Length: 114
Image (cartoon, helix red, strand yellow):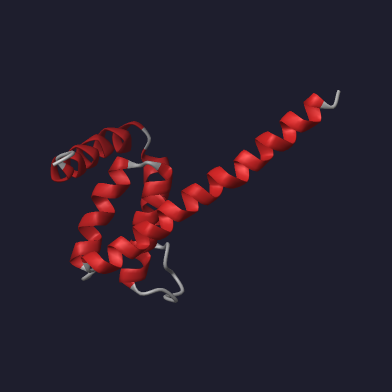
């Protein structure tokens, strides 16, 4: 086991209570944003959680991983579906590294030409 994800989720939720006390307007807006993120209903719950987990990987958010892994299990995401979504996230990260490597090479070439 890499981390205790259940404990991570519990701690993040408890810490959120501190932030709610310190900045209730911001936290109320955050909670509203999350509650309404699928307002038009175009995506089913499984698809939404698979996207959330792929994004959590690319943004490196442990709290997001904990919350959305729990939610994914609750809406019936399978391990096969999850591994496909994570494969897409991994491919995108390598794709982004490729694109930004091209940018570095381009910048280097421009400075070399000076």
